Amino acid sequence: MEMNLFGEVRASLRALGLEPGATEADVRSAFRRLALTCHPDVVGQGGALRFQQIAGAYSLLKGLAPDELRHLSGAGWRQQRSLVKRRASTFLDWYRSRRDRARQEAEEARRAEQAEERRQAEERSERVDRVLEQYDRSLSRRLERMSKSADAAQLNDVLSRLRSSVAEVRRLALGRVGTLINRAEVRQAVSDLLCRWDVDEKTARLVGALPMEAVVLRRLAADVASRAGQFPNSLVMSLLALRSRDVLPDPLLMERYLVTVRPECVAAILRYWPDDSAPSDAALRRLLGSEDAQVLVPLLAAMKQRFPHAVPRFRGRLKELLEHPAPAVRVWCRVLLAQGEFSSAWNAGVGLRKC
Image (cartoon, rainbow, N blue to C red; front, side, top):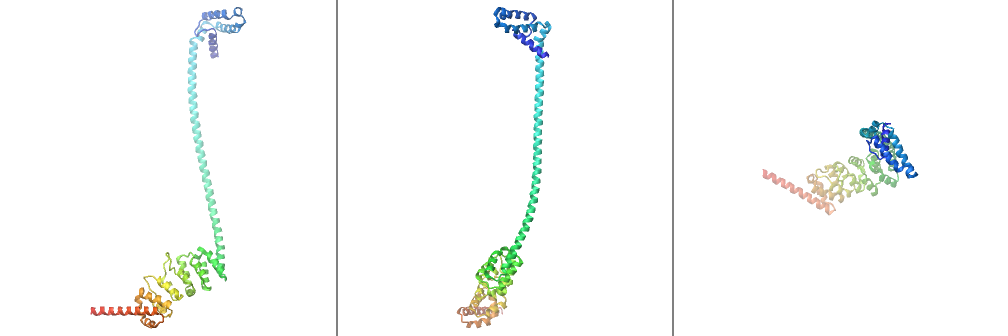
């Protein structure tokens, strides 16, 4: 209420052209001076509004006691204005403090909200991960069951076709065997196929191309060794792993094949014979008993180059073979016998010198 009165006094002083701190005499003098310039009786109706303004201002100021006029228009006004300024400054400081605190609280709330959102997102992610992990395990088990079921169906189909009496069906089955060959029942089925039916070049190539592990290959080769004489050379080479870089040939298995394969295959087996071993005397005797030059020539050459220690034990048979109709056989026998005589003479000379 006091602030409104201060304002009205200030407005009235301005209407009369006075400054704050004017006295009652100043008010009266200013009103008279202005009334002469705007009274309707003096200037007509054009000054009526202005006269009403100064008359209203004069009435307000005239109604104040001298000390009230002095207070409201002078020091009191300045004190009040200073108080208002102080209050405004205090309010502004409070407002700024409140604003800063509100901003800080809002920032803390925002951070807390973000932290909560991150926590919830992590929880959702963990839940999703658990669900996906469970789903993956379930799917893996299902696929494993399906795979086993499919493998069983494929296995039964392959086994059935391998046992077919139609050669083309058996060849188709061999083309589908793949890694199933390393299963005992499939290896046995292939072994039965090789032992029961005639093996042509197509079948030999299909069997030779099967991705067999070393132990499986040796078992299969051992199972069908008695039929080696009926196999094409390419199948014999594959079963004995003679050209393999991953599987070492087995001398015992090679010897079983050596005495049963076709004559034209003997040379290949002897050519790949391991350097640190030799066929047994029984195997050599059986081979030397042959009259086929395809067997004798590579055998005699091997005895000269790789098994010279076996020559003395077979001199009788070598002498008999000097009458063989094949020139190559006779030549190799003479070379071996001459080598044996030279060795005997050398050994005898060494013995005499020692004496």
